[in-house]
Length: 84
Ligand SMILES: [Zn+2]
Image 1: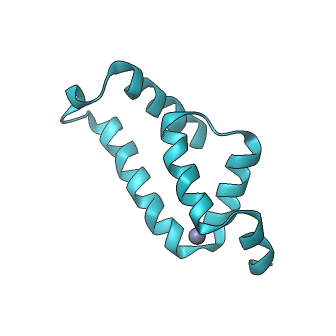
Image 2: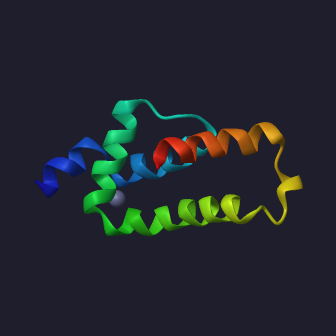
Image 3: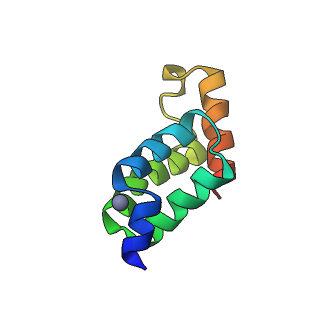
């Protein structure tokens, strides 16, 4: 099982997907592959904490929102909405 899942989405691919979903919505296949990988890979779940901290940061009100363009903020919000 574990081995099979690793073949579906590698750690490297997962990291790329986690970054990519901040910029653009993932395809359902990409999203599923990422979720499956995260379900069994503790290393990548740690990486996801970074994404979660961004989500909390967005919800709590960005402290340095001016660093991001409104378009970038909206893309991130949409990506996070999809992920929830
Ligand atoms: Zn991994």
